[in-house]
Image (cartoon, rainbow, N blue to C red):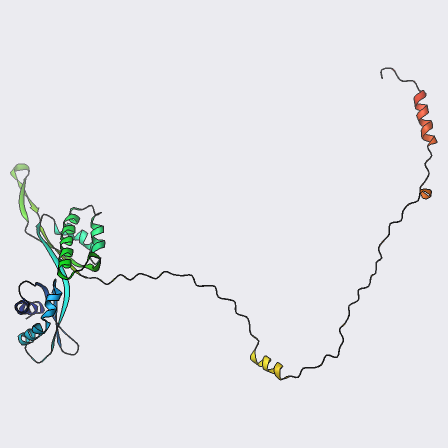
Length: 273
């Protein structure tokens, strides 16, 4: 028996204990390092399953058999399925790859601006899955993550187009089934703002300890020398301005100038001046 068939064989046991109103979307049986077995249940109503965890453990242990211990782990998971959509699976997968792994709020915001027919169908299925999660365990849009989106092929509609010479070409109008799986996302941690570190004061170089110890042990010598006085000699004397007396000024003979003036006045003027 392969792993998938073994897991499917345990589903009826889980439905008997839990009841029909609590769906179990996925069941997985795994082996731990210590040899014990762990059964993981994915359901949209985790609180209802956790109440009957003890009964589930005993039922699975009887079904599996053996002396190994069995533990049950409940994983909250919400699903929504849309079938027989008039949409090609290949065109749907082009949009799915862009939002897979994102938060539900970010995926819905991105689908609003995708110019593709598949974005509208995926957005409706995603909103339905978010509503199932909120009804199941009260999770909001910001607390959910798109774990996986599946686009499976549905039945194709056969149509015929008339061609030349009485021929008929086959046209396939494909359909798809969309499945959206949401789980709890990690809480958003706000990144701390970077604050500039204050400037460090410059370190003052300290004297070596050996020199300080030697200076402390050495005796202080008395000052025997007297302070030296600095004497600045004046080598140049300031020059004093001596007033000039009237008797020392040179005499100017004005008689020659007067004679020259009188001679120029006696000469007649030339015509035309």
